[in-house]
Image 1 (cartoon, helix red, strand yellow):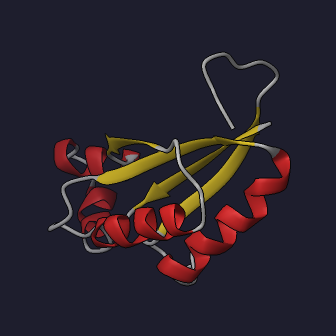
Image 2 (spheres, rainbow, N blue to C red; image 1 turned 180 degrees about the horizontal axis):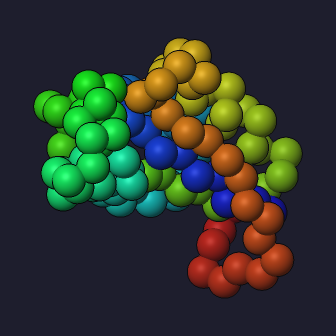
Length: 112
């Protein structure tokens, strides 16, 4: 069992992504609002010149990201990651998404 974590910076794709999950029998995702470290630091660190430069790369219109986590059986993870790549596109590009998995040793209240 694993937890797939997706930090979605392209929040405008959230509904499409969730619909694709549902269409493929993937359910049980939890979505929370999140903000990246650089975005937070860029708002408050006026005294450091580097953050003025960083502001040029941080989307000022985007207030927050969406962090999605899904507990799945090991064999379901690759299918879900493929869907994320299809919806979001090349996640190696900045300001798109970050995706990783964490092993789960024990879980209660989760149904598959």
